[in-house]
Image (cartoon, rainbow, N blue to C red; front, side, top):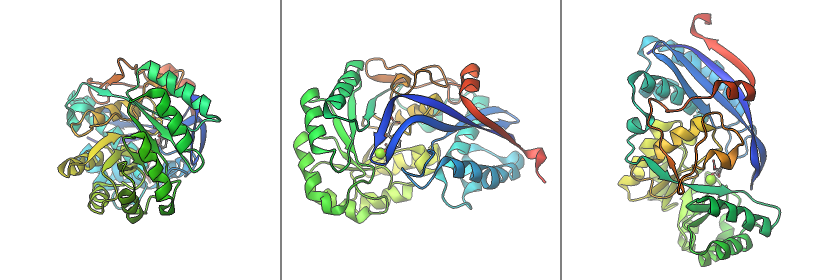
Length: 372
Ligand code: OSB
Ligand code: MG
């Protein structure tokens, strides 16, 4: 296929519940939606970078700039030879910026698959038509507000609860939620808020029969995670540290984690995400699908990924209503704690034109024929 233009669009979606983590509070999701305009048709992508570089070093303004000045020109230069599978290689000379690259690969994949009449799920290797869903619950002002919020999610049918923790908000909220939900699956995510000196404190979480502790230490501290893993009985799961299939192998072999959270944006795209899945499966390490507060576009792709065989734990693939009053696409609705994996061509969903224009704050288009 040939890329003729790339449309970049900032959209703003207010969250129904403010989302607080150890690195900040979000009340509105500002996303960057891209549309690849090709000779075989259009494809949609979503860049999951956030406005501020607080989860990782990427942020939306930088992602947009690198897309415009460094990434899209490389895809234009590929001419007719462009395929989704070649995108990562074409962009590899540019260091870093995995979320920006992932958005472009996602759009190329969507265009290609729509033209072929093949779904994301089929292309990625899905083995399920619906996936078990969990929900990621932010830090709240009081423990009773947290218990109420968790209770609502349980009533809606979520199959697993994930609590955000940080120093000062860990043992007590986890104990209160465990008491409220009985034996339902529960896990925690620290988003790098601890140090290896907190290992004994983190071991106190062993009393609550958690599925896992996600990313307690900084992104580059694999040895520290291996040390914590020795001193804590609860399995350690990595999110921020896993930036490629290679880094997943390294983390597993160092004993830094026994479970992996996979986010396509963090590893540079859905095709690398499948490779992370594969290297984990080959080593007996279970994976689950993380989330970055995606709109229905990213959600559709995440559901396809989460339908692969080694996605053995419920993901942060929640229903549209957990995030938004109105999604950018048709709503994803939780049925019996599960979401259906889209099976139409490409993503199987597209932005609703009126919603898209309502939510858009800025649009620009890069064109191949406008190159100097
Ligand atoms: O660490 O998993 C995380 C959201 C934004 C950035 C990082 C994370 C998250 C979540 C939310 O936990 C998951 C979701 O429901 O999309
Ligand atoms: Mg996380």
